[in-house]
Length: 130
Image (cartoon, rainbow, N blue to C red; front, side, top):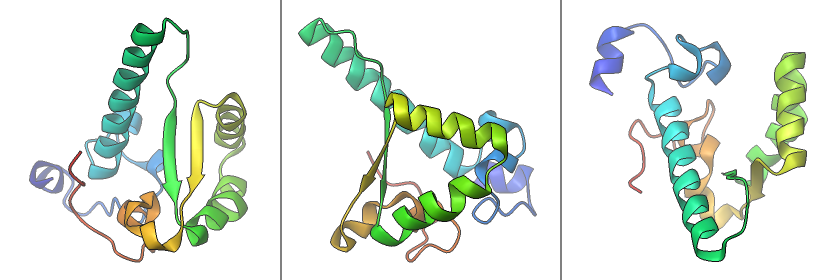
């Protein structure tokens, strides 16, 4: 986190959409680090499940949103994306590569946008332990 702030001193990673970050998907900001970590965990769990059950399931990413951010994601974020990103997101949702889970307000501490997104209820600078 400190290295990122030293390398990009005036970059506001919380309030800028992830697709506009420097270096694209290889951006060293906490938001992208968290996403990469979740992808690696999901792949590992999926591979273990496949090895245990001999099933060929593709790994998927599960994003958890509180009711407010769930509605914001589907009604505002996806429609405002550039066409290419909008189509890829909708395709990933239909294929099951990305799973969006609506969690109750009681579990809003697990909401992705509440933790790392702009306008979150309880923004944190550090990533949660896994």
